[in-house]
Structure formats: structure tokens, C-alpha cells
Length: 179
Image (cartoon, rainbow, N blue to C red; front, side, top):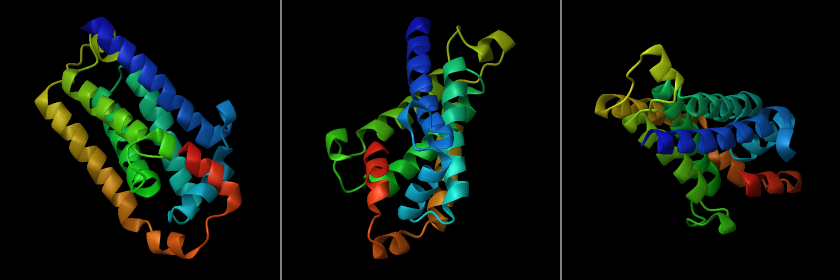
């Protein structure tokens, strides 16, 4: 079980961190903070830059913490918050499949964040090395609640009506496909 948790944490955490680095720094073929700002504004997050930073940090920080098995419930909550926003703002209504820009990938990331919070990061983790037992039902529920509250706050200030009134900018279409 510990090897399975390690594999899941490292792979999913590294991929999430990569998504965050794309948003923040333009690494790995990303569009960087300015491109992400414009994309977030096209989704109704205004002003776009703070939301782009929060989204990028949620993915980068949550991914790194998940991969390391450090502050695992916090990592899971960050992943849940960002992925719920991605599902609602960018993928909802497109069906489940990523080939149709659907929500399967952010849902998978979010569920992994929650599952690891419930199960714990395993023995091969920094939480374990420090002696923290941050696993179980209470930690899993806390992860879900904190992640959903964070997502709800961001979604509450989002203005999807403003985004719908504007024609999506052509320059942001490839960002929409990558989200």
C-alpha cells in the first residue's frame, strides 16, 4: 500500500505542479502568468491576475506538497479548490471526456487529492518522517470542506455573465483547450 500511495502521490503531484508552472512561469509549453491572466478573465475571473496566481500556486504548491507527502490534507484541499474551479468554469457542459475539453482530468486530480487525504500519504512521506499522522476520516472530511469552501469563494466572485457577453478571444482558445 505504501508503494502505491508513493506512486500516486509523486506522479499526480508532479503533473499538477507542472500545470502550475505552466500558468505561473510559462514552463513546459505554458503561457505564463500574462497568458493565464487573460484566460482567467475570459472565464469571468476579474481581475484575472490574482486568480491566475492563486490557480497556479494551488496547482504548483498543492502538487509539490502532494508529491512530497507533506501537509497532505492541505495539499488535497488546494487540489480540490483548484479542480472544482476548473470543472465549473472551464469544463462543465462539455461532457466528461478530455477529448471534448470535458472534466475527466480535473475530476481525477481532485479525487486523488481527496483519496490521499483520507488514506494518508503512506510511510514514504515527509508527514510520516516528521511523525505526523494526518490521515483518516476527519482529515479527509476537513480536506473536502476546506477545498470546497476555497472553491466556493473563488466561484462566488467570478462573473460568468461578463465572460459570456464577450466573444472568447482567439488568443485564449488554446489556453481553454489546455485547461
